[in-house]
Length: 115
Length: 114
Image (cartoon, rainbow over all chains, first blue to last red; front, top):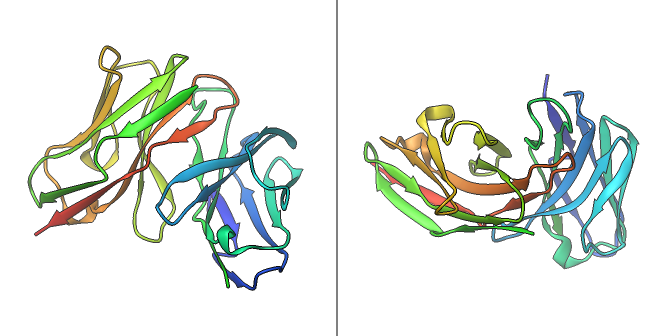
């Protein structure tokens, strides 16, 4: 009954490879997010989707491409991985209506290591 | 535009003593404010939130925070630290709009010694 789940939890890969991280939420939320947490623990928004539409796209290299097949899923595909992509990636979700506006629920994170 | 400043990167306390983690914010809008906690190698868990109701907010595990608009502060406190409180704490601000963008502070590492 995990609220926000991500797979895989750990991802180790070589430079230049392409990889995907999957996220699913079972909270009935209409908005989902991807965050990147760097080695200094700083968290920064990358993307946000509302009802499968992209609404926030921070200055992220276009090697990163989010895809939302439906409201409950937001996947992150990364092409041509670079050393600097090594980080922990968090998925989150929230509702844009009701009492819990703005409260985001986070997944457990995916630790990506690029060698 | 919005921003968050967590005034201490590390705070060390002894078990059983009070905890104070300081946070100042700026926001062009009437903000929502949150504290999240991250235990080592874990995800983020919401401790408490302020969304323009009572200015003193109580959260989980005995934590509370007070919203002070005049001081643009939202400090996190706990009367008595427990060893299990050792973790990274993030103060977060969000504009009160539907598509909320959370802006995170840089985090405060709370260390609790026996």
